Length: 166
Image (cartoon, rainbow, N blue to C red; front, side, top):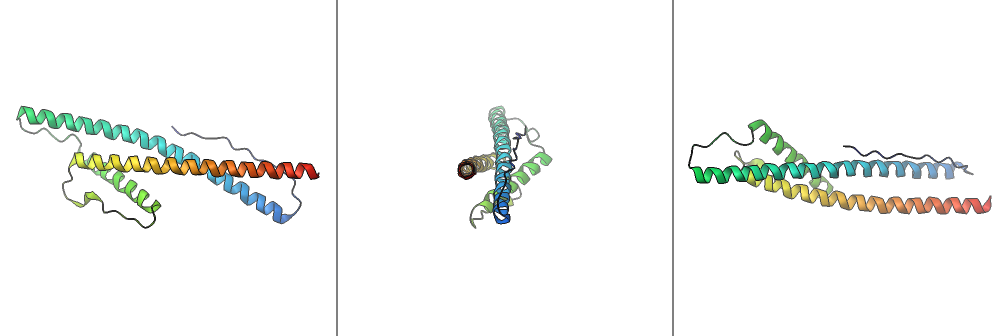
């Protein structure tokens, strides 16, 4: 579910083209920051949903492993179909690349280079990645909120300053 915020446009009389350009660039940056914040909030919600999905699959996998350990029967088909496993690994690689690109020059070797990755190990690794990504996104949201507040205070100060000299 996407969260969309309403944007307000202010039209203020400006005295010079330089002042108008500065104000326009500031407003454009504010809009970009708000859009980035909205995208990050959407991402946080998706990461939280994905995290729950991964936890459920991990729990199912562990329950299946426990049942198989006690029954001594022929192994059933894998819990994750090969297509689903490939999709999970692609998502894992994508998230890993996303996190790595936001870190300064730190690249990690993906654990998926082996031919037959262990499902539980894969899910645990993904859970760690999702937890780290959630922390990074929360930190970015916090910073964007602080920057947004500072820009609004600056706008209010400029507006009050102009009102006293009119």
